[in-house]
Length: 513
Image 1 (cartoon, rainbow, N blue to C red):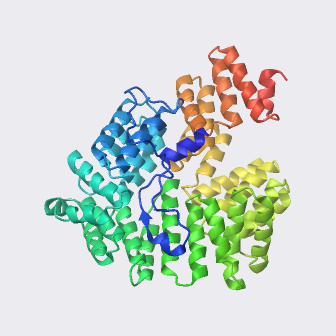
Image 2: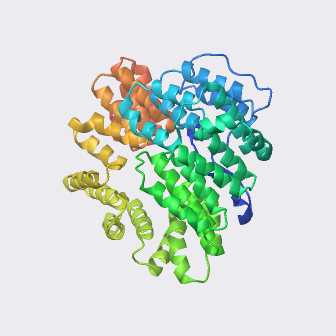
Image 3: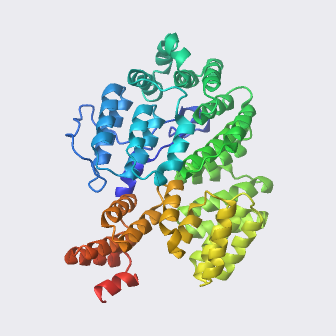
């Protein structure tokens, strides 16, 4: 439940579509809408100013109240609430990083910078903060009043069905438009929502001319082109975005998601459109929608289904419907024995069934057919680990990092094997994927080993916030309590760990079972 609440307030969706039933209605774009925000009564009173904490979920409560006000176009109050939250919440680098991303996404760049400035360990945040700046930030700093004004326009465009009125007022402010690339972006967004593609194109071109490095502007340009008379022109913009170096997982996902959306818009064939839309939903982690959309993409054409079945099998696997995943992956494999997605699913199914010999064969076949991803190589190494071939696995992880410096799993795995690299590599893994629970857990354990209990407590707090049902979290909390002389607390934590995983030997040893 806690993990769901975290996702509710902190997961950014760079390209969120409204929930509809007909394919033609997917044109409505909401570029900065947190996933399924909680709706609160209009007269909700803000919580008293106090240090919000991860452990008591008060960050969630205060954030939702502020965002509800933003959605209702009470932007000045929302800005104040967000600022108070950033300045008063209990110091936590993870929370600051997520707030920095969220604030940039809705155009509160001063608050994004404020949150970034509070991060104590820059090695954890450097990649994400760099990506936030290149993706979102305007070329010139806006003053607070302009941010609030543009936030009101944005809110009315996206959440209050007032795109025409809000945009009409904005374009009268010629001084702001001449000085701010972000103001031109908002004008373009408003015209797009009003279905004025020509005006939208004019203003986004101005924004890009003033700030060529901003990828969010390029993204909107691609969205505008995808809804114009020549949607395939959007693919050129997409290629430019793909060539830019983004390191953090969240931002690379945004690009993959955008690619599938543009391809959905650019195709005229219904089945092709549904295939790309289903793939888009997969990257947005809306698996149920992805499954239904991909199913609608299936036809009697084997050539077409050879693309649909592999993605559908991956969706089934991630939904833990393993029988359907196997059936669909086998169909995909029969149509195309070299499809890396289908091969990976078949490998994952074998791995899950502890048939490591078969898994290894599938993973190696996938690797030979995919030269642009480290996924297959990582899975090969993990399979060798299961076969107790640690040296071979370690060599593969080292080789992966020479070819892919954004593979957080390889950094994590090497950190577990090489104590001299333990802390820096765990932090590198988190820098690439801030939500990588395993790295936060092991960073906590590493600091317990070094008797740095305050650091360990903060790292474990993040891991527990991401997933409160991980048995390792409670085991490490037990070790922390034990090392601090809190014997009864330690016992309770070890019992909780064993309750979640009855076969976990370290917890049994601590409890002398």
